[in-house]
Length: 375
Ligand SMILES: NC(=O)c1ccc[n+]([C@@H]2O[C@H](COP(=O)([O-])OP(=O)(O)OC[C@H]3O[C@@H](n4cnc5c(N)ncnc54)[C@H](O)[C@@H]3O)[C@@H](O)[C@H]2O)c1
Ligand SMILES: [Zn+2]
Picture (cartoon, rainbow, N blue to C red):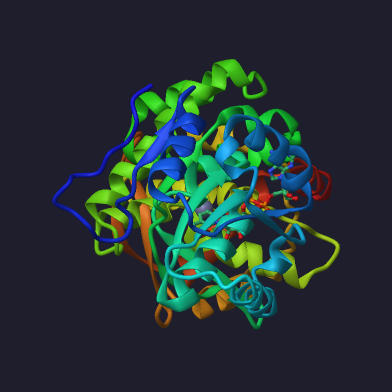
């Protein structure tokens, strides 16, 4: 499998190499011995990646055996200023200078927080992402966005900063739970839907728990993201394609966080966001009904139902107004114009968003049943 190499003339954020395939960890070993000899090297992980992934990493990347390890608690709560403060403090105690290297071993939480800490410590030290979740491999660890949450708002504080490279070793996924695998599949489906119809078809038919079969699709999905981001690192136009499903998805994530008994992973929220956005694409005349039905059927079959009350719609649109990417009462959506093609910045009203959410709500089996019994 070939690696991703951005155009040499570019040096903006979002244009880092992605190492993939059997040689990925070997490339990391080579880079460390040739570019970080004598430098302070720190591996950052959470309790799961330190237990399950670090031994594999150390076996295959001997240059890391002398590295210092720092562990944060797993979960979104670690994308937090206090965690950053502690990490900056550790780096200072270790007398890390600007030659230091931070190796972020984990899912999107570790790469987001580790990337942000590295980007800001002494105005930026070098870092490498070694994603260990599917979400990390196809999305979070690619493209140079780093962030932490503040005051309950996701990714409110962050920076664009590129890792030296992102190193994708899919064998790490062997220990990942099924719910986490499907969570990452949401972003693969998204890449197919907005950029590449073949990818959509492959992902749709793939045996998702067969790592051997999934690996080439993971590489393809990571490449699709890397290519879009390299063309538009700061989200001026093309990168907005990747926001498909996220306008409503982010609000749903925030909504689920407010109601303690209902948890929703990022990919699960995006999947519902994609159901709504696909319906809006049809409603606004951009997508035909057959294609809408095919996308909807696939997503509804793959992801768990998230039960909404009719009254929840209001709160969700309110949360959308708080999103840093939205302004006022009109939202800008990325919508499908076909399978594998999309349009960015399509204006959608709050009333249309409410209709889309209601459409999702009525798709859920027990809502349908309830309406039927009442009829
Ligand atoms: N920067 C970006 O462009 C970007 C893009 C998408 C998502 N994100 C962010 O990523 C975060 C979500 O990332 P995630 O879904 O990877 O979640 P995560 O980092 O919380 O990981 C999920 C769980 O899996 C565990 N885990 C990780 N690797 C494992 C392995 N190999 N085996 C067993 N368990 C393992 C973790 O400890 C954690 O409990 C969110 O904060 C989201 O905002 C960022
Ligand atoms: Zn996402």
